[in-house]
Length: 333
Image 1: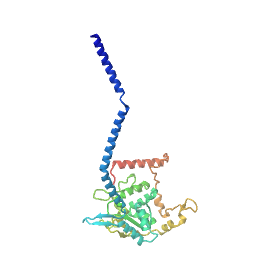
Image 2: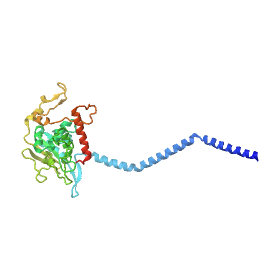
Image 3: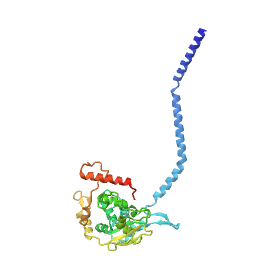
Image 4: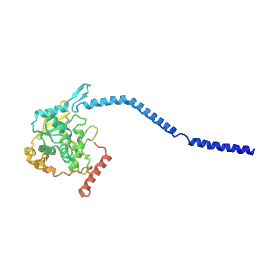
């Protein structure tokens, strides 16, 4: 019995050792094969899902391609009566400028349309998409969003005609609160103590303008004889063109400063990088000296290489801080 018990015990121990030995010697290729199988399953599921959505993706790409291939200044629209029309207002306006203004006419418009005016109307614009000169864009914004009288004071030294986008949607009036903020970033007297210029904009969902917006040159030209009581000053502006669907309006600037026009056109008043060089910057006419004296050079926030240690830089940082605080604390127009 003792021998039998001992024999049984030995056999049990051997079985345990044998089991451990068998587990330790499982081929390495087995786990690798399992991993490959999982990868194949995942890949198959991915491609199955891809082929499932591919037709939808293809269809959406084609629709987008068709939309992007249409000229941006001409598009289809639907009237309130359900009629399909072609809105050709922008080309129509630019073509009017080309046919009805002198070759040396200068057009004041928000910079978004500068290249279109230059390319289609072949007229000089006050600003275009090359907006690297923030101070210049701010001067343009100041003219548009300041009072009609002040806007004319600037415009008569820079332009012969003013073009505005109307008709609702993303027209110039809808953009104007942003224009006012740009103007204020350089001309702080626009909205003293308020970097976001909250005094300029709509007061309610019905499109009621704030007193500051209502007094602006842009509002007067945009809404001229379209809204009750709104008429552009006939001593300063002459309404000369409306596009078919009211998307573009053009006004002739009256009492243009011919002295300023000659100054800007004279090559002798341009600043060249070297004598006889091709890169020559223009200068503002002396007639704008009073306005320009109020400008405060705006430091772009992205100017990381600039050392900010002066009182001016501290003031600029405080301005930016207040700007962003206002943006967060109140809804913008």
